[in-house]
Length: 221
Length: 221
DNA sequence: TAGGAAGCTACTCGCCTGTATAGCCGGAGA
DNA sequence: TCTCCGGCTATACAGGCGAGTAGCTTCCTA
Picture 1 (cartoon, rainbow over the protein chains, first blue to last red):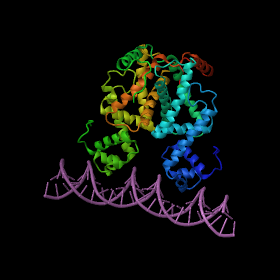
Picture 2 (picture 1 turned 60 degrees about the horizontal axis):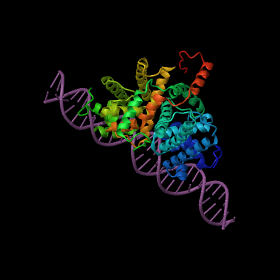
Picture 3 (picture 1 turned 45 degrees about the horizontal axis):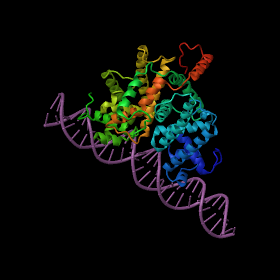
Picture 4 (picture 1 turned 60 degrees about the vertical axis):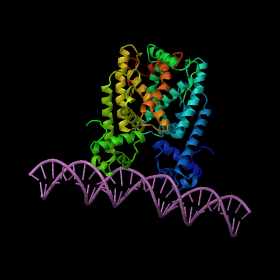
């Protein structure tokens, strides 16, 4: 039940070892390696989970659950960045790396993590707009999806470029990333990029000409 | 020598088949599958390239070369997006998918592609600033690295979320992506995100307090 | 105290991978 | 015409993988 890290039953130890292995070295990590990390035999994976896919699913569910818990436990505030105070603990860093790897790999789990983060960001964004801190968008959801996709994508790419992610003191890696991107982020968010609004105006005119009047545009699949 | 697709020598056919396989299904595609796609035997890979790693290196070099060629051949203009008119041809789409997959996978090849695109974008950005189209940044290179990382990252994530990339008519996939992100991009680039400059001002003050005066800040590794 | 289930391990199987070796075949040069 | 040589194939090999089977220990319960 709890998220302690010591003498647990084999199933929990195996699951936690798999989460660490997956986060550290990717989802192709072999069952034998995972079992060795957990200090148990390889056959125990099959005994408890049946298949590797099922073990992976259990890891995904556990990570998502712990992520939710950590996020709601520390509702102090998240100024402008997702993953704000999360990587302070080793546990939080582990979760972030696992999630980023899931997104990078694609598949159902990555999609679920993305949708979860988009929903969070949408709440946050609406509140920020209501409080007058953020300019409104002509399509709030599209903007949030776009911003999350960009932010997470930048993290994914940045970490993919590095030689390897140190699972411990992941906070240092995160700090380095923010140190490199904080100034450009604030510049872009505060001052924009274009000196004139020609491009936007033209595109809005183009949109008005092709679809219904831009009151409440909605995605069309 | 040329990039035709029909009766080539086995080495070229093998290399081209590997590029398509890697782009379509990832770099774990087996040598036998690649050879089958090329219509040759699996042993020929070893005969011509020695190891799979060497085949991969040949593919990387070929893709980078073709990308350079395609980019310089069509120097008409690239309004605000990298990969502007590139995916119009099947060849161009193939290259983009291959590059995105390389970046997503990480490693030396992905780093090289990234640095190449950053250098391109830096040229373009300096020119745009000089022409008064784009506001100057306090650190041009940091901004460009950040923007490229975000743009490529968004593409990587977006394509990772999709079930599979259709190698043919990749232009349609690209169009769909731009259709979803064009409005948020133009809004953000034109109007920014924050209503006030508090965050930026505070961060600049913080920077001024920790380092040398912010005249020409430089990255510190 | 006997029984039985649960937790766990040792061993095995078939498959697929990259790599290695031996040899076939056709065309160019002497 | 003989010969050699490069392109190419067929087959083999060792290793790692996920999955399957059988059996051991331990502890709880009837």
